Image 1 (cartoon, helix red, strand yellow):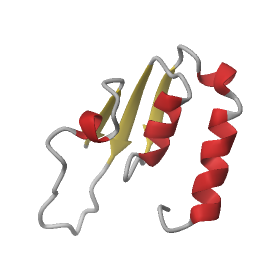
Image 2 (cartoon, helix red, strand yellow):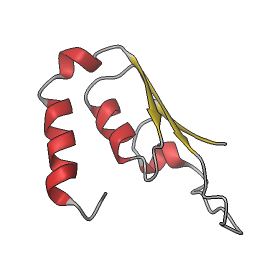
Image 3 (cartoon, rainbow, N blue to C red):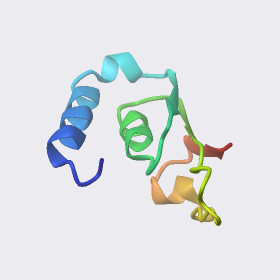
Length: 82
C-alpha cells in the first residue's frame, strides 16, 4: 500500500477532511500491516486506535518494532499481533 501513492493519499485526505467523524472515537484497524491507516486515524483526532495484524502463516520469524506507538508518533496507537 505504501508504494501506491494515489491510494494512500486518498485514504489520508478522506480522513483528514472528515476529522469530525474521527474526533474522540475509538478506531479498530483490522489488517493494519504497516500501521499507516492507524496513524492517519490518530492524526485525524481519534481518541485511541487499535491496529490489529496477523502475521502470515508461512513467516518463520515475526519482526515488530519495539515501540510502534513511538514510530507512529502517537501513544494513542497500539498494534496487536495475533
